[in-house]
Image 1 (cartoon, helix red, strand yellow):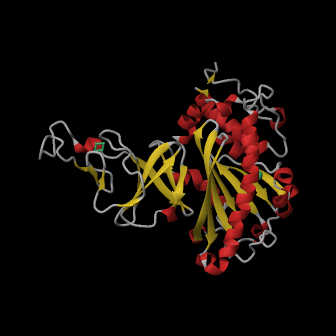
Image 2: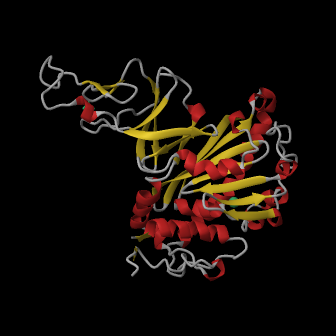
Image 3: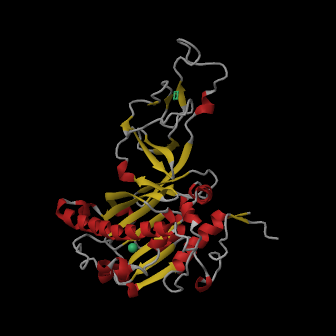
Length: 382
Ligand code: FES
Ligand SMILES: [Fe+2]
């Protein structure tokens, strides 16, 4: 007997045949119960993009960020090692670090002065046992360390995982790393970010990213550089992707940028756009890469960021500043067009006249697959 309990009727989306499937119900985009399930089953179990490594430049430095609504503290120790912790003091639960800062010797809580080492150990609890008494019976400092979060880097980015049980980052990325074995990601150099709060559910951004059906109408200019009919889809166990087979960096206006060396010929005219569960989207081009991350704030609001990386030190020279900017501005414009549709789809989720729609079996198998994976992981619980 099937003991799974559904939050709502998602039978339409878990249908395997895309032509017969129906998209998620509107509540999946407007209800906190759905978002709570997504946070528990996806965001607190999967590896998540934290930040570009280059934003953590100095040793002895602490950087607070927020990922999936969680305050996270990134610490670079005296040897350059990076650790992540829940950014909360284990005493009264104060946000430990509010602004990026240099750490002279220890991390010091601003409320009662507790001190923590770079590895998160509780070192000092001033006057905790009374005036001049810095210890107290019953207080075992080992029990009150900062709570660590797993953190690992790949392709110039830091990833974190809130779960101790989840498989390693290498397991998650193995198939993608193999798929992109021709690209030397060690050459990537961080070149800037675009961040924006959008009035739309995070899933809409992913669903939009993995289909190219909307290109001619939503992005007429992009469609002239990277045409709809030159796109294909790829669905694997590890990622859901769309591929442009006629990517043209000259036509896009940044042909001067250095490219990855040694790519097979066909890859010079290809761009790939895979999405990794839950919210990490990647754009790989012969001359740059971006991560596009959409982090839920509430059911109807998300924080999104594009992080751009170029190929090799020469790409970061002043001479190529304009070409780099061309890439960033191109995606800013594309994203503005997408965001208008994402926000309009969110508005449509309030309509009593909409209860999910069909998927194009050709163009939207990827969108269907993403919704199906979310539903299977989050809404149907054993
Ligand atoms: S809350 Fe941090 S030392 Fe008291
Ligand atoms: Fe788009």
